[in-house]
Image (cartoon, rainbow over all chains, first blue to last red):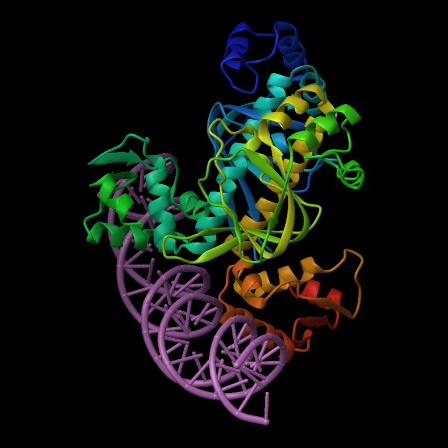
Length: 228
Length: 228
DNA sequence: CGCCCGCCTTGACGGCCGTCAAGCCTCAGT
DNA sequence: ACTGAGGCTTGACGGCCGTCAAGGCGGGCG
C-alpha cells in the first residue's frame, strides 16, 4: 500500500501506533492493504488461518460465533477507529477465534502479522500499548462473563442500554440504537422476541420510552439503581 | 525474598520466566514475596488496588465475582504452576478485576508489578511470552462466553467433564472431580441442585457413572458427539 | 457409640424465556 | 395505490432451571 499522509495522520492518533517512529510507520503501511466490504460480506471465519489483523476505518463489523445448534452470538461490534483480531499476533498456529462479517459497508486496513511483530520487537512502548489493549479486552470479557452467568435477560438489556450512554449522562437522555434490533438481541444473548418484550416492560414501568430506534431513558440514575 | 535454588529451577521451567537472564531472575526474586493461605482465606477482592500478580505453587485458588443478588460465579480455578492476575501489569490505575480466595491451603509467590515491568522492558522474549499468555486467556474467554451464551446447563456440564480429560482420552475413562461439587456448580454457572440432576440424568442415559467424586465416562467419543 | 454438621440429593413448584405462529408497520418497486 | 418483503411485536404454550424444603449420608468429636 502507498503511504498516504491522511492515513499517516490517522495512525498517529491511534494508541496502538502512536508510539511508532516515522520509519516504522512507513514499514507498517508498506505491508498493509486496504479492504472494502459490502454489507453482509464475510471477512474471515472461525478457524481460518490468520496472517492479518485489522483497523476499521468506516462502517460496522460484527465478531460472532455460531453454536452447534445454529444460533449466533455476537461477541463484539466493531466501530470505526477500533482494531480487532490483534490476538492472532501471539498464537503459535494463528487462527481466527471467531467469524467476522460487515453489517454495514466497511473500509478496513489489514496489517501483516509478521511485519508488526518485527516492529513490536523494536518498540517497547508499542508493545506495552498492545498489552494494555489486550488487558482492556480481558476486562471487558470478565464483565461479559459475569453478566451472562449471573444475570437474567432483563438485566442484560438494561446493562446494554446503560453502556450506550456517555459516562456523564444524568436525568433524561435519548440514545439511538446503533443497529437493527435483531443484531442487538444476538449481542445480549436473547431472542428478538424477548428483547421486544423487555423494552415494552421497561416502558410500562416508566423507566424508558421507545420510538423506533430512539430510546429515551427517563431517569438515568433511577435505571442504574434499578440494577442493584 | 532470598534466592532459593529450588525455586530458581522452578521458575526456569515456567514459560513466563524461562526467557530471563540469571541477573533478571535474581532481581525478580528479590522483589517477590511468599504468601501462605489457609483454606477459605481471601487473597484480594474485586476493586482492590493491585501491585502484585501471583504464581500458585501448591493448593487451589478460585477467582470469582459476586452478583448484586449475592450469587457467586467462579471465573477460573487456579492450579499449581499457574500464574494469575498478570493483567494488572498494564492497567493505568491497577485494580484487581475479580476476587481471589484459597479453597485449599495454598502457597503462593507474589511478584511486584513495577519490578516485572522493568524486566519486560529489557526482554522482548518475556514480553512475548506474557502476550501469548494473555492471548490464551482471551481465547478461553471467547469459549466461555460462547458456552454461557449459547448452551444450556446440560451442555455446560458435559463441556466441563470433557475439559477434565486429557486430549488423547478414548473409550472408557475415569476422572476425579478436582473440588467439591458446589464449587464446580459455581464454575459452570448452575446451582448445585441442577448439577446433581444433570449428572443423574447423564447416568440414566448410560453416558457416565458417578461414585462420589469419581466420574467414569463410559464412552468418550460418544459423549463428545452428544454435544453436536 | 451417638450426635451433629456439612455436603449432596431428591421432590414440588413456579417463573423466565425460547419457540412457533400470526399480525402489524414501513418502505420500495411496479 | 397496490403489493410484497423485511423487521418488529404480540400471544400461546412448554420446558428448563432456580428456589424452597426435606431427607440421606459420611466424617469428626465428645
